[in-house]
Image (cartoon, rainbow, N blue to C red):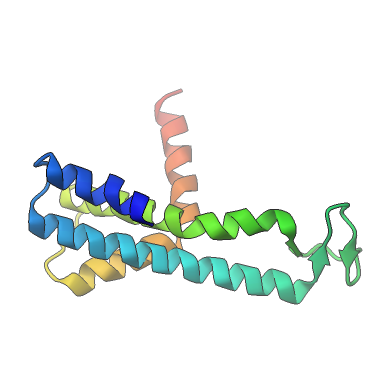
Length: 139
């Protein structure tokens, strides 16, 4: 998380690209994004655990005939990386709001935290939407 903080907040502040107030707001957004993404990872992990297990060979328990997302060892790294993804998406959404891309204004820390949390919660969905948008623009 420190690496994410350094890249997204400290370096731009050191270079004079953002003010101290913006750095504080971005830090709130990054932490809220990480929290939102951690929440999504936890819910996904618990749902998969409730549906059963899949081992390295693809054997599923219980009832391999049902199509459910199951917990497997390969998902471990995805669950660990998810908070960093949420922090990064929250920072990008914060920059978009501050830059006027979105028709919003952030005047209070609670608003920054709320949008950061939502960004983290929906980080994978937001990235999929942006990826599709960019594919259509740069054909």
